[in-house]
Length: 310
Image (cartoon, rainbow, N blue to C red; front, side, top):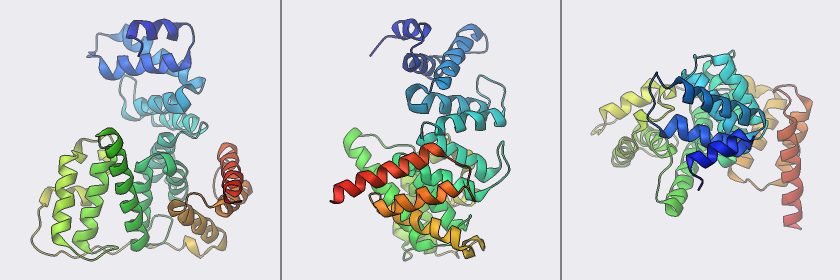
């Protein structure tokens, strides 16, 4: 691993990956205060240059978007955050899709649009566990899709299993662990998508607390209902479940076909036919913004899985 001095030398010469790593080290690992404007501005310059070159698979643009989103080291600007998240998604950056989805869901820098939020979460799901959790939330709350507690529970369970697999390899839980445990606690407490089990609910709420879910970078986007449930745990009695939100969008055959293939791929990620169908749906640009890179990704996955099955 290069030292910071070596990273800065490479960054100054125009290496986009070195620019990202130097900026990340300065902004996240050094103890900085308001008087360190020169080194902060230098790091921001590295990050912008890396982002504009698609540095580190789009993660530089994503990091820059987060800084504008939170107003850290720069003046808070949601429109700029969205711009950089979009830049990240041009490299199919899953964290970029995640944060762009959050912007669409909560109306941060763009008008609220649950369809586009859902689509962003889906596009980033295969390579970022948090997207599975947000998709589960959509099915739990009826955001764009119809309320589907059984499928929601499958998505939360998949996210947990994926994080446990990651833990086996790295001995570290991702920031998704506390988030998914919090939601599984809700499921077992209120019998949503599974049978009520107070002991399991309390177990998962305890795991969520150990995961310090309230300190995660995404905690401002956790439903207050979930945080209140966490604060009041452990439980010794049953509580009623909330009624789901209503949606009528899935009455549209076009949307229904899209959701059918999305649900299939989320649990069967190697299905070539669904990738082919989604490429056709995205090409029509009726519901979503045209995303040529993701269309190409769907087509390439379709061909790859087709070859593997022969």
